[in-house]
Every structure is written in C-alpha cells, then in structure tokens.
Image (cartoon, rainbow, N blue to C red; front, side):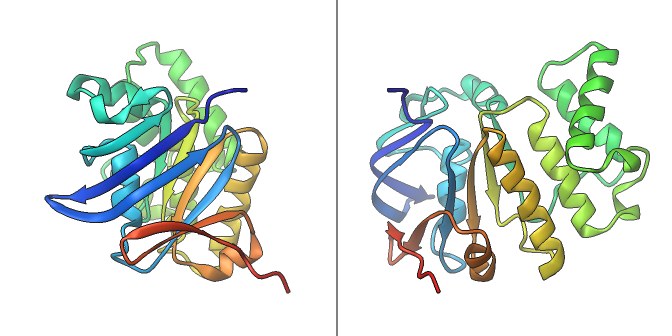
Length: 227
C-alpha cells in the first residue's frame, strides 16, 4: 500500500499566533482530486500556505510529498516546492516579461540551466494548456482565462506530484472558470493529485469530487447532494 501523498494528524493551523483551524486529520492519496471549501476567512488559504511552507506547522504531525512539515528547515523549503505546483487566484505573472520568459524565470529559479532543455520544457507545458501560440505575448495582451492557463503551465514546469490551486477561478467569469476546471480535471486524469481551495459551489456541483469544508475553526468532509 503506497503512502498517502499528504497526511495531517491532529494539526492546528496558525496565522501569527492565532489558531485558525484545529484538530485537522486529513489523508490525500496519489491521483486524488480534493476540494477545500468555506467562506472567505475560514482558513482555506492558511491551510494551503501551511502545505507549501509559507506558514510553519507548529502543532500536530504533517507529511507532504515525503517532507515532514513540522521539522522542515528553511533550506528544505525550495525542494518541497519543487515537488508541488501552485496556482493562485491572481495569476502572479511577472508583468515586465512575456509568457515564455515568465516560465523561463521559474525554471532558472529552480535550478535549470541548459537553454535548449528549458525551451523544450516551456513549449511542452504551454502546449498542454493550449497556450503555445501566446509564448511571445505579454501578460496584459492576453485574457484573464489565458493568464490562468499560463499559471497552470507554470505549475507543471517541474513535473510536480501535486498541484495546489488556491481559488484558481476566483477572478474569472463562469464560462472561463469551466474551461480552467476542464483543464485541471484533465491534468488530474493524467495522474496528478490536485487540492483546490474554492468558494465557487456551482463549479463543485458541475465537477463533483471529494469535498472538505472549513467552518467554525475545523475541517470536515461534506457529502454533495446529487439531484
């Protein structure tokens, strides 16, 4: 039996010294698609930040992509992040360089150095998300949905084991949100584990998957009603 890709036991998530979520027990297996839902301020993003080590795990046990989150040292954080891809609500593309160079920046920052290899990888991930045609365009020259596709491509660069998507459709219109969700589901069907924080209940109904809810300082599974 393979180990879960994410395991949290009796975890409390802190923002500064405030406990945001308490007594979290969670296991995510390889290849799962998991939603984390809840109102703004309920702790979804704090939980995500704990997973990618932006917030320290101070209480409980946490293992993620073979790293012990409680014992994680500062110098290990870049290696943890190489194993995960992160997609944010606000795209976080660098406005002063084109799509290709945005992705090049990430590859260089994560230790790639061979130009031809980097160009091949960039073409490959842009092709996967249907954005190869936009490689020479600046972020402001493409739509919000296209920018988010590029952000998904960026998350795929280092062939991560898991994609953490924090409100990836939050800034998109309903039609574009569906397109981005179709893309994420396709990536999941090709074997990637995806953990997605959202408050878009319409999307969850359209693309059902295991769902956990942050509410009143705790995290629990919710069963979706089927019509």
